[in-house]
Amino acid sequence: MKNEVVAVTVRGVMPTANGCAIFLGTDEKVFVIHVDTFVGQAIEMTIKGVKKDRPLTHDLIGAMFLGLGVRLDHIVINHVENGTFFARIFLRMENEIGKKIIELDARPSDSTVLALQHQRPIFVARSVLDSVEDMSEVLERVQQQQQAENPDAVSVDDSEEDDEDENEDEDDSPDFDLGDDPDGPDEDDKDDGKKKRKK
Image (tube, rainbow, N blue to C red):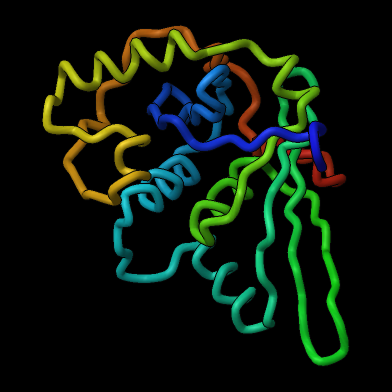
């Protein structure tokens, strides 16, 4: 992949009017993908290591991977068009017959949850990273406001480093414009039958 893709991490998760804003990026640049509430909660629970009473959808997919001898290798957010992001999941199968790489079209939101659950790399195509707006300053303001409202809360970056579970206020959304259109289509409404789904 060389310079065609850039490794990124989840830098923050913030509730919005329509779901959640997921901040992805590097130390130099951060961008936002809007996801539905369910996926946003799944990402946050995975980051914080929250144990679930019953397996959720992404847990079930992971269990199926394990049962079939499939390993998630990495994901790539490879395209963005009119604010809609697209991703590919790369699966690796190895057995006595040989090795095989399977590439699947997927929403970046689902792909991110699976990558986090399996502790696998998240990549973004260089062309995508270069084209999106830098939201680093917005993320910094969001984190400062969350810290002011709840001094005991641990940021996403901190929780990734030490896996400590801390209480964080998830109910109040900071008053920052993240470009989320409250009247826009839900990601499930954008499914046109060709797996071109938002986030």
